[in-house]
Amino acid sequence: MLKEVRNMEEAVQEAIQILLVEDEMRVCDIYRQTLMNNEKMELVCATGSEKEALNYIEHEKVDVIILDLELWEGDGLSFIFQLDERAQKGKDKPLVFVVTNNSSVVTWETAKGYGADFVIPKMTKEYSPIAVLSKIEKSYPYYKRREKQGDIESRFVGTDASGENALKHIYQYIENMGLLTPKQGILFMSEAILQLMQWRGPGILHLSNDVYPMIAEKYHVAATSVEKDIRAVIRRGWTKIDEEKLEKYYPYEIEDEKSRPTNTELIENLAKLLKG
Image (cartoon, rainbow, N blue to C red; front, side, top):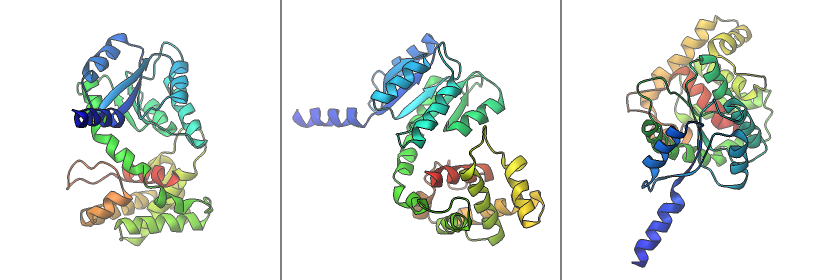
């Protein structure tokens, strides 16, 4: 009996703590009902207020935030921005799942630029609260593994983020993953990652419209060549990567053994990981 109680206590302690920021009471009720007897995830708070949500994370542990962008008080994008500001001050940043009826791709990309980890449109037939929770359950272990990469990320502490030193570290990191050729593609990929790590402006940088042309100008090549060479690095090297190296250097979910990330996925994920 005592062993069973201990196992129950451990399950509660390890349950993923979810904050739901959603102003539709019907949707909140679905999440509550779905998670009522779930030992892996726990709904610790549900609110339609930006202020209440911010106050909660200041005082309580939260692992994951499910966030609607349209709230009865406040604004979802403003909330994400404040989460990012907290993270820059060294505070914990929960995994953020944006769920929204907003169909603007610009809005989705802005949310990602501010730190949203996933954007899930509500208007698609695949969407449901149960589908969101399933995504959380599958993704959270990879998020936690990424958090444990402090020893890897620490190599960037104290480096000159605007100079060749940081570029060399990024280049070496990509090679350590097991991506080795073509060398020019690795160089272009390193430059793209560095551009995203350095970015401090409003909104986000677009690879095709912003980053590739900057790299092309620096190395006197066509922007299409930059994209092509980066894609070649992924295509040639991904299926040959050692699984242990992949888990260590790229702790992100891969759907199956044959799949590989796109240029955007790989560059954005590595920029986020190495920026810390």
